[in-house]
Image 1 (cartoon, one colour):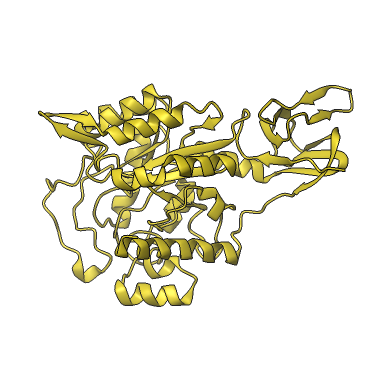
Image 2: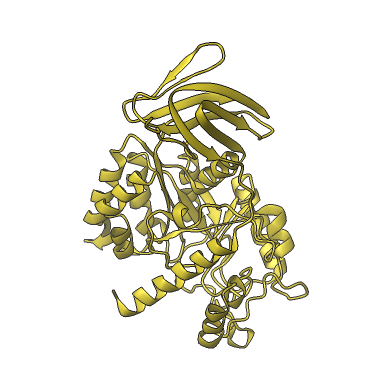
Length: 407
């Protein structure tokens, strides 16, 4: 007898794939970035915008000997101390874009400055940032450089090429803030910059994950490289999106909307045509989910505690969360039907989707299917396997190699 497909998707409401972004605030101003967000809002695509809370006082230098004081008016992007820029950021929050942190400043910051910056974020936006994206070479970055790696050959390469000395996780250092991060920030982007794979979830399926070797971070997550308009267009080709849909995958794009997405023409900024075409194309998919990054990561944590088991005609779905879960999405074959103990039938859509509207906390629902099959999605823990960690490190350095020889 033919076995039918049944698969639990991590997306709500019948969505079959997801795309979101983290916008690095480097060189961002209201003038060069607002047109991008106005267009994304019009196309109903959400994501996450990072900010600096304070002007930098020092260079971004991963070695203390190279750290220098800088002029307060250095031109590397606006901070929320600029009222006009802050008004723009607040308008994004009102339109349901997520506001996150890109360290508190563009240059190295000491512990007391980091605490002050994070508290300024909370005062300004009414909550602590759920996400932090490390900025470049700031000394206070947590577990960056040599410390981000498990693979010995990559650690040697990192040490030889950069000889960095990041100290954010080292107690007693003036840059230490690991305890503050653990208390106030839920998610940190793992400092790998050049992952070329469109399906971020494919290479990091356990994200968001906890790494016991790096305990000051609650959860790590990965991104795919769309760092400038050129890389964004390479990442989001039609072929890549088709692959993402086929794999029921998810892409978290790491980008800088200040880098070529809008270009100055006759004293005003005009959107890049390639960017416009990509956004128009992906916005037409009615099976695509466009959450903020923390919305997506929160959903992944929830789904880790949902198990789905099919054995022949019997299907068991269990919610091990201490709260109800809405809109559990199952990918099945067209014609697939589930019947609950009361005789209520859930029939697949023509796209092969069944939605469980609500599953009560710490409960199980038993179904009978009309087709035989076998599927096991057990509970996932939050620890990343060594093999997956090695895959992430490989993809990062493979991306670096490709970029250096321009393959």
